[in-house]
Image (tube, rainbow, N blue to C red; front, side, top):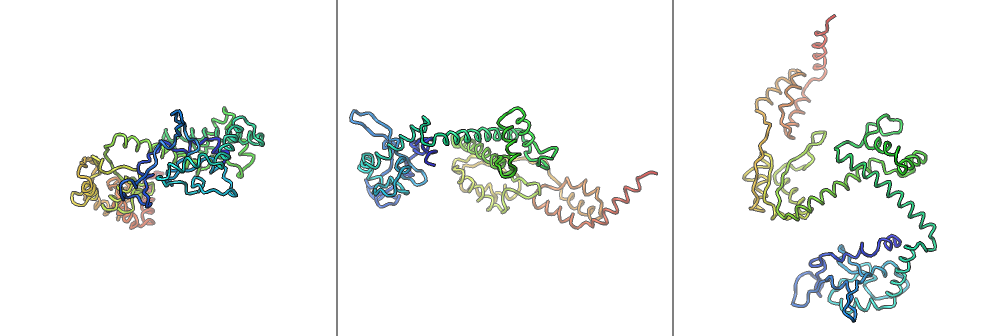
Length: 395
């Protein structure tokens, strides 16, 4: 971990461009509320620079800020800390330094301390040796660098393949994905196709086949799902960033059933439950509901109800939200459902298939359809169906 952080540099953990307005505001009493004028202190970006006697400003490369703990740390002292060396500086501790009213003496006193100078020299010496390849274990380091580069190249290829399939809306998995299968699915077939012309993937597949299950292949369904989740999160973050940049936005809400016809959106189908789910999603994504200016739902009473529907509950929180009507292209008459029930109970399989398309695809209608199908005498229906087929056969 130490070598990795030194190679990456302090910039990845410095967080100098963080907004320190609220996260790093404390008072002398330790609370975040104002007590009296002068008691409140906060960290500013100027503390990351040291002003020399000639007026020149130099970046304090050793200073690192943790947004999660809202504290300052010394990068080199945390990396090369000696547990046997006594020190009273909070820049060494795991909690960090956050008493901002003492920044003036504490930062300077730590910067000129002997322990800090020793750790700073160790940091820069290791950084220089790693860049020049002059470490004691340079052969081992070269092997680590080559191995790291190899796996990075493999991961880039796997990631590009998954990104291509996701962009084309193609399924990754196959029916059977073992080596003896004729068709292993789009993902594995594309990997083997590229391996014919790419030496990196070809070597990787050969090693994977020789080592068997004990080797890491990065081709398992778990890795595929992880890559897809990473892509989805990146797209979502980009969309949320565009929304925040535009400030005002509208929402469209609709549920999507899975392959078993179960709603994937919410277990609670009430207006209150769906409203809470929408608001909690806004809060998790960092979106302000007061900036919402429009909402669009279907015409179901739960969503479009004017008294206690979702649209009314959202409007009570933000009166500026306007609802846009969505015209349903498909609707059914109540008589169709009753007619289907009567014919299905007569074990007419053809009628069941013909009238199933009239059912509205809601959870209540699907449950009702399932109850009708459960009431069918399957054995009798099969015999009746086979008898009708046999009558059409001509000898």
